[in-house]
Length: 115
Length: 116
Image (cartoon, rainbow over all chains, first blue to last red; front, side, top):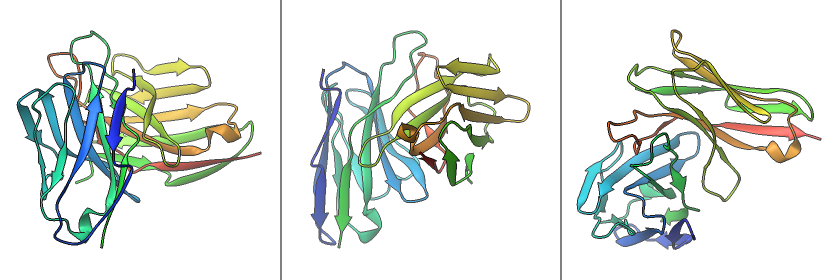
């Protein structure tokens, strides 16, 4: 299994540009989440999904859109990039039906810079 | 309002020493408390986790101590090694009725440096 994969690893955007961060998992996990990590702030939840076709907002959703058309993929869209969205973005997934198993598996991250 | 407070922000320990990182939470509905380890340029990886029905959990050199009444939990790293140098995050979540969690609330992290 490749686990949770994210592309690209690095991206530089100009203010106002849009882009999609890709996330895929091959573990048949139902739950997927997006977090952003900023220095001194820990990780904060942006959006999450409990299954294909079902998404909801986390703590910091403004400026981001998500969709979940398949179990495997959970892309994060930046509609109009702003310097405040400069961050490292992590995708995570977890399995909902195995008793006592709660671990979230994280991808390697996408480092985004908005100039 | 920060729901999970982590301290210290940074910690320097000598090889062989004990590293202790503390976290406090506010939401009494939290019932799953993991610790994640993150190396530079990598994603966080689960180190050890505890549910509130036990007060301590040990895995190798890593131990979680949990105090439900004080709403605090801590990570102890015994015989700390230079390879343990990383950023450590505590987190908390509510395990839903389906038996999983997908909304972790993280502390701000502790940068641990273990000197040889």
